[in-house]
Length: 449
Ligand code: PLP
Image (cartoon, rainbow, N blue to C red; front, side, top):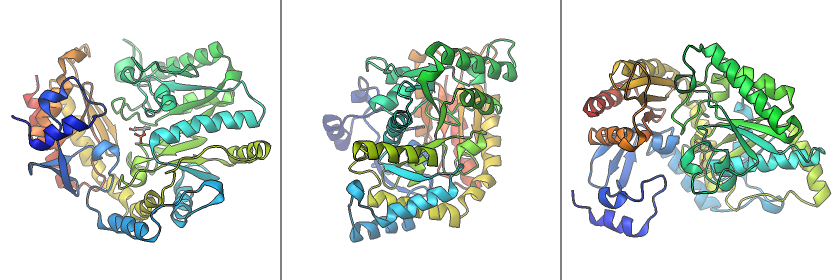
């Protein structure tokens, strides 16, 4: 198909993240134009079920009038103010109070950013600041996992455990150490049970900490369910077992809830679904249902106290972003959390989850699907070249990308993460819409080879 005028203009002017830049000149970008509920339309008028909530973020779908109104009202009242040098705005207070109310562990204060990457960057800085304040200047290394996704700034991309975020970017920086990914289907060894697998991962972690020196390891960062690594669900016993090791060595657990948070996995937080007891929490994305950019770091008492002491020593707390806690994002965030509660979004997610997971798990019967996995309204099917041996497709063959293209043809937007085809639909999706989503998904799978 010849490119449209808009596609040509886009290609002449815009850089597309996470896109094969060497190919996009031939295919052209998909230009999105409008959205309502779980549907979006491209600029040619074709409608799609948006089964990824954009980038795992528009939990309340498109065109929610209450959110739009909350944003407009705030822009009219006070379009911008920062919170540097002791200033503040009411929407930030309201949102911080709400976050503390729903947090999975006791929280003292909330530090606002404008994105998930900035939240995780801030986490690292706060852990360093904290350890300096309490007299442990050597305790600075951060352990992350292979296949983790924590963002793209220099520090958060270092935490990320994916090759395309490191190769040719001169990353990861040396303070990050990656340990084994807890995806049993892919990384379990022949004959190993899930229990053996968890025991091996615990040993791997112990060995890593011993090698680095426990007094140099400050924190372990983890998404409860890994999202952008391919929707990788760890064994139920994984986090309790890992956490025992961390506690023994006085290593903080940073919970990255940027995708998992806000009802997505069938609880308010992924930490609850996956039995994590974090010390600090990062969130973004569904925090505002993506109607405005915002991120948040939720900080416990003992850290905040140390931050106060450090600030007294130096003269101020030297960290903050111009747009951190922007009033637009904060007002929309406070309204988003209010809507999650008053519209019982958690109950709704729990109501449609059995249908979603039944259809998801049924995909495992397809000859191309090696594993279908998920929790709540978050899932993926992993395509393999050989189901019996779990042999993956050659990544260069681009089977996952081809399958995602077929899905687009059938009016379904998904995300191909290698050969794992991910789903994360807006949480307002109905049972009938779940059915239609999987009908389209299956049609495209049948066309894939
Ligand atoms: N953490 C997780 C778990 C994510 O999935 C993402 C983005 O996908 C980030 C952090 C980074 O967030 P942002 O893209 O807002 O910087």
